[in-house]
Amino acid sequence: MNKLIQIGSFLVASFISISSFAQVSSTMETSLDQTLDSMKTVLNTKSLSAAIQTADGSMWAHAIGNSGTFSQVTTSDSYLIGSVTKTLLSACVLDLVDDGLIALDDSIHEFLPTMLNIDSSITIRQLLNHSSGIFDALAHPHQPDSMNADFSRIWTPEELIQDFVSAPNFAAGTSWSYSNTNYFLLGMIIQEVTGNPFYTELRNRFYTPLGLTSFCFPTYESNLGPVAHVWIDLNGDGVLDDVHNFYMNYISLNSTAGAAGGYYSTPSDCAKWMRAYQRGDVVSAASLAEAQTVINAPGAQGNLYGLGLMKNTTHFLGHLAYGHGGDLAYHASSWYFPEFDISITVFNNDNSKTSWNLLPVVRELLKSFLTNQAASLNENTLDNTKVHPNPFTSEITINLPADFGKNLSNINLYDAEGNNIAKEVSLFENENEYILTLKNLDALPAGMYFVNLIGQDGSSKIIKVIK
Image 1 (cartoon, rainbow, N blue to C red):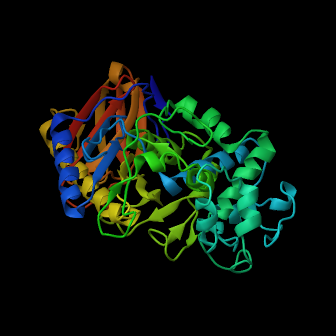
Image 2 (cartoon, rainbow, N blue to C red):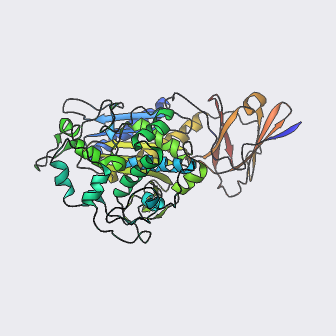
Image 3 (cartoon, one colour):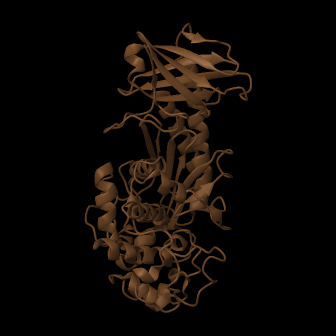
């Protein structure tokens, strides 16, 4: 009896559910550790802490450098993620869209009262992608002095908007300009729609279900774990100072960042978040497609901006990435690479740097990962006697044992450099075996390729093929 197994015409995303994450191989770990250590030296920075989550759920994490004067950072230390927070707010808004509670093209007057200098016809979409034209409250010249007048003051978004939002930069929908005010308004809309503050909704919808225990907005939450100290040149003498005790009591700053940038996290949790969000685990496929639909955004990393999301095709060896940077004395850079189904997150605690300085770190970690992935595939190839034809031209057919074929969860095709190749897949049950066919491979250049088959129990088979 022949039976077609519906994995999908194009196998894009079908993955194993893993509650606790394995570590990458020791060879990969050593190489990635050395890469991060080297980049700390290149940047001449206080510390770097980074994490990668791979397609099979494995996790690599490493930290190097100073927390305090006499202490070293660890992978358990949280850093302030700044505007990476915007990916969380956008996902929450999109989840509300999926729930049918709001629509992206709803005008904000449907949810919020009239406010000075804010056009009430602006849509939720325009808030998310920074095409609203609303003035950035944090760019107002009097805002820093007001915030520093009372370090213990908790600023509400309503107060920030009332006191520091000047006339619009442009008419809504006619240009692009990054504005934190957009996300203050989105936080207010979330509360209006759900009855809960945005930080409660984020915890209920994402952190608790995904097990992201380190995420914390310390103005209103008390679960913050160990934190890497931040270093700032306080007196302008060119020497960085450990300002941890001051910064952790800088409530006016954290509350001001709020829904636009107030969260702390470990790199591992942030990498898990970015991968879960961007591979489609937390919002619908339609909403994710909306998030990844971009407009021109001069000045954004990659110059393209979606819904709380940057699209970057220029900084990472030509590979597409979605993610965000964050800067608030600490610096963060978190990206998902759909081609490989991996996420890479890098954090820094040195105010003399920026999130732009972390883009080369992400790039070098990606390069190291791909190089070692290709080497690992070469080291673990299996007998190819059940593969035909080999060499192949336009199709590869593989006969799989029944016990493995019926539990097949994911299929990847890699080239010799570790790049994940798009392919069309069919899988048939035939008597006591399964017949897997990878089709439409005519356009691939000649060379060595690897078929990686992953079972639902995490077992893996790697088969070398030649074109």
